[in-house]
Image (cartoon, rainbow, N blue to C red; front, side):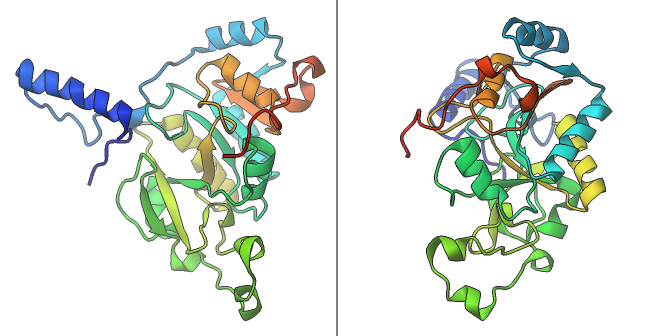
Length: 282
């Protein structure tokens, strides 16, 4: 099964383009790969020179690193239980963050779900997050063995990774019961042991795949929490300025834009924003 990832109003526009191409222009369908949408990474991309220019113009304090250093710094930050803003390559088309404009976290942390919700997204603590998993490791961690590149297929966490609730835990109610870790990756495990999965493919997003490989090599877990790079009430970020502004208005500790890394504690206090009370709960 292949599901078009923006199956809403945006998908309607895409369908209209297909109608014009095939029915009116009489062009034949030409399937060149198993995913002609190229992972849905169809939006703008910003090269390093432009990123540096844009960040300098807004007063950001940044460090340029090698690609390998970017992975090392990001993984070290994630292992500390901190959130990372990840801005790489072309922006995603559609409603999901797919590793181009994402906020990342360590799925092993039982606190990560509430931390991201309350301190980054500014929304209710119980909102679930999705796992991004290396495609080659998918069936070892989830009851699924087909591609899900657009975070659209739901499957249970693999039995080998689950944690059964005790009798006393089963008697809990509401948030207390929700907060009981149900697997080795509690930040992405729903109350019924399910998860909405994104498979990461080297062919369509080599840098995100490499980051997951690095995290896996150091932790034994080929999974990261992946949520959209925005706060409640705002659209997903697009430009370096968008990413920096969101970074400065949340408790994200590290921002990575292409080969540039930014630490929150190094940024000018005058650039901090207060997003927390800017939007009503939805």
